[in-house]
Image (spheres, rainbow, N blue to C red):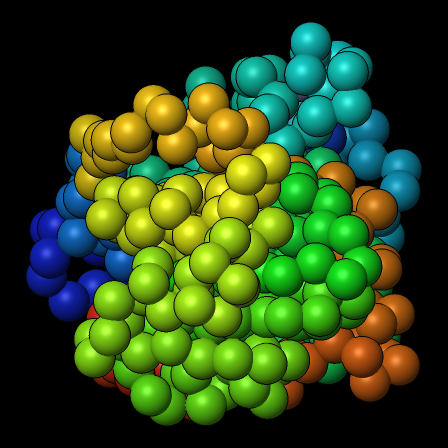
Amino acid sequence: MKAAVCYEFGKPLVIEDVEIDQPQAGEVIVKTSACAICHSDIHRIRGDWGGQPPIIAGHEAAGVIADVGTGVSHFRVGDHVVVSLLRSCGRCFFCLIGRPYNCEGRFPQDERPRLRNKEGVILAQGLHTAAFAEFMVVDQSQVVVISPEMPLDRACLLACGVITGWGAVVNTARVEAGSGVVVIGAGGVGLNSVQGAALSGAVKIIAVDMLDHKLEAARGFGATHTINAGSQDPVAAVLSLTEGRGAEYAFITVGSSKAITQGAYMIRQGGIAVIVGMPSNQDANFSLNAHHLTYGRTVIGSPMGSTRLSVDIPRLVELYRQGRLKLDELISRRYPLDQINEAIESTERGEALRNVIIF
Ligand SMILES: [Zn+2]
Ligand SMILES: [Zn+2]
């Protein structure tokens, strides 16, 4: 099968034929139909998060089940599925307390590599998925069956960007109707926090970004106010839009310490600031005045939108079917696999909401 392999951090991916194993017990093979490019892939192949190449990235995917391993009873060859990096063992402490997104289980993939090139060199499976390839071998907990009527190039967006942004609002913070919400970053994740806030009944939805075309997109997703952080102080601007008090909620969807600090100063007493985007380096720290928090403010993290795949993916597919969740508008451009480097560069330059590789 063809795959896009990262042999050296920061260098273009190499498209070549690679070998994939048969599925082991509890695993499925999915023929990839579409995979969007997420900033986490870029961090991974630029070396921001450490690790060693060669590696195949890609984790926001959808496709069709091509084979199943022993013990897989819920999936059949031909099922259309969303494929996510989230996997859950169902037996560990976190799975048993209802937080499968914090699963600490071990999986057969961790013990035995599943991908190698023609010379027999082992290729790491980036973000548990390796979806920049024509086939993926993943744990069955990573896939959710969807209706064959759901277009797969839009379904793939649900696997990461949508659940991360929407889930932070709906699952992690449980935004109340009538609230005021700030979303920092109006990209492929932030726009989903904006539409999650709109679907939750937030009255004021303030989008903050540096790029006017992204702020314009945010209006289309439900933002009621926009702030260009390049031309004005975003904290002062949010306070002036919220009677000087701050918003009930802030969602920080860009992975920068500065944005996290700003988000924490945008919330009112009793408000909640949610760190949604993964920081771009491992040692990202931020500091806050302790008095600011003593008035009852909370800063929390949102692991992948606190998503339970089998609960949230069907909900999102239904919202899309009803015309209440925007997915078509998130796709900036579609590319074939052999133009993946162009798609990645465009994402890095901040031009795209989501670029999608079509197989
Ligand atoms: Zn992602
Ligand atoms: Zn688990």
